[in-house]
Length: 260
Length: 316
Picture 1 (cartoon, rainbow over the protein chains, first blue to last red):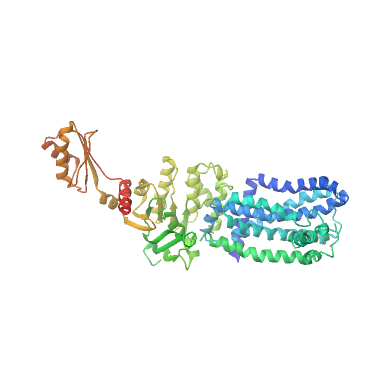
Picture 2 (tube, helix red, strand yellow):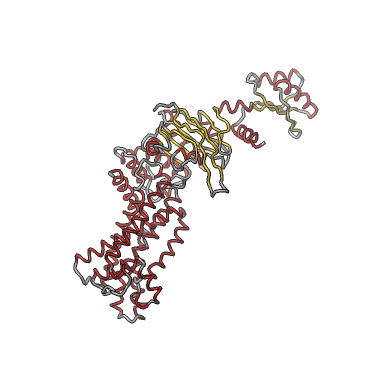
């Protein structure tokens, strides 16, 4: 275990150094949600029944979670890039913990996500979003957000190790933008046709978004929704636990096995 | 370590691809590399050299067979193998987003080297990378990148170093630098398994050569033994076309092989395995037979000759 912590720490350091040496991608991924908040908030918001400010308050938690779901994309891209460039093979020949490489990547991603949440929420405050609940609940919301990001990153790492090709990973990763569209991140699900509403409410993004809206005090929990949305905190924890329990071991196993 | 072999493999087999359309990359690779020596794995593209290295460095699992690397069983104790080896290859690479120094520090840390920063500085200096140390490795030239790669495999001195085509695509100066570094290592007792397409490289570095062809070791021996199986090439050039037959008769008598003719250059060639056939003796014999000579030479065979000959033999 101490080996895992030590090697994982070294890999975490590596990922953070990479980002520092090459900040372009970081800046892009951090400004994207802010841009979307301004576009959606003012352009779409003007066409919705909900008043603009109310929609922007509704949108801030949604975009936070939608951005967290991008962990699939970034996790996949980085793992595929490392595989494609031969870095994974180099690391596999070293006497280090087999779980350290994916864990270090997931941990570094968490640090970056946490840092990126701050400017996004500042812009959120500027466009009318407020923490309307207690500080403890708000801290819980951020913790839940990071847990969800951690879970999606493991999905991404597994898929990246599977595709092994950064171009394919980039294209496949781009397709993940569709996931928050099939959830309550940008729109309430109440107006959706029955079957689509079911799909959207069983989307993990919906449970986590609802939990954040609840904990920040931005919107009430819809009671007639599917179980994970009607019980958003339990639902979110359930989804995160399932995703980590499934994709964590898969990613580690995939890394350890290489291409055999 | 109980065995005197740093690398010992028996019947390694590896298949790739879906069932029914499998490609046999290795069909029973037997390899023995004595401790402290350099073994050159030579072979045409697709012979299985890289697959062999990937198996022996724990990157791939064999479908059959067994191997010991640095005294550790490859299948039962891959972690111990990883502690004993260094790998520099076309596929196993340093991180281009990190600087040279950051890469070496990271690998030193992962190898549990005491004082990773000092070790990194020492290696940067040794491989002439101090000036570029704080630039991202992706900005390095091919030669610098390869040197950094090699330095990364040496953060902790390995018992066995695997070099997969270490100088492919490098200019002569960079190539010499890599060769020098390998020679220094072997002087310190490290065993090296080298794959290469450059026969000159094997000739320069290897104590033993294993010729790999279609997934098996086809021939083994020292570079000198390989050359001896081919013999030296004798060629004489005469002044007039009509004395070529006379020259050929002398060569036939001296070498016992059928001479070949190059009418345009008025040259006659033959192959000899006779070490006592020196240039003065050749010239004396031809002169005594009344052959008016313009030029004569005896050229030792290159490994290229050996390589072509042995792989042609197998193809035939």
